[in-house]
Structures are given as C-alpha cells and as structure tokens.
Image (cartoon, rainbow, N blue to C red; front, top):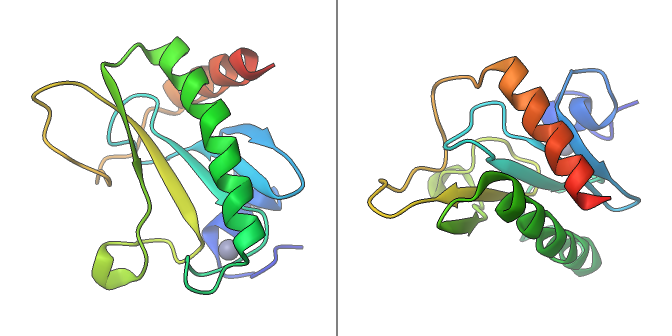
Length: 139
Ligand SMILES: [Zn+2]
C-alpha cells in the first residue's frame, strides 16, 4: 500500500508502478529518473512521503544525504562524466514537479546547459541497464 496513494513516487516505492530501482533501505529508495536530463540521472527519495524539505524529518533527509555519497560514487564509476550535480527543489515555484522529497544526481560535462527535468522519457532498456550497473557497483 503506497504511503500516499496518488503520489507517483509512493506508487513506485510500493511496486504499483514500474521503476528502475537501484537501491532500497529502511529510509530511502533510489531509482533512475524516467525523464533523464543526462544518462545516469538518478533520484534518491525518502521511503516515507514528505512533500519537501520543509516538512520532512531531519533524520530522513540525513539518510538521503548519506545514501547520495554511495550513489554518487557508483554513478562516477559507471557513467564517467566530468562532474555530478546534486539538486533538490522545494515547491512548484522552485521547479519541483513531484511533490515527494527527492534529490537529483545528474552526471554533467563541461559546456552542457543546466537541465534538471527533461520532457523526453528515457529509453526503458537503457534505464534498466544503467540501474543494473549502478546496483552492481554499489554491492
Ligand atoms: Zn510520495
């Protein structure tokens, strides 16, 4: 049963909607962004539904931050981009599109325009392969 039934991230966490899951623990779930701004674009979300930073428990935010270290290193090993952006948006006015606390990890290269959300859905096979490689790297 999803924590918040009409939330797409809660539906992915509950397994009601297919997602390319990379990692799960008691406090966080990590999966590929379905609309990647770059290959390897990964999201880390709180397992429990919080709209944003302003309503989340500090311990849940800390769990996401700790996980981001491990996921960032896996992305670096698998994707080989020059840099990695970590982005976290709060509220529609700030550009948050799914109102469930999440952090974007986006591989970046010199000269690329800053983009956090893409309008184009990622190739399902490519997303599945990246998720599998990241998962393997984190073991
Ligand atoms: Zn949710």
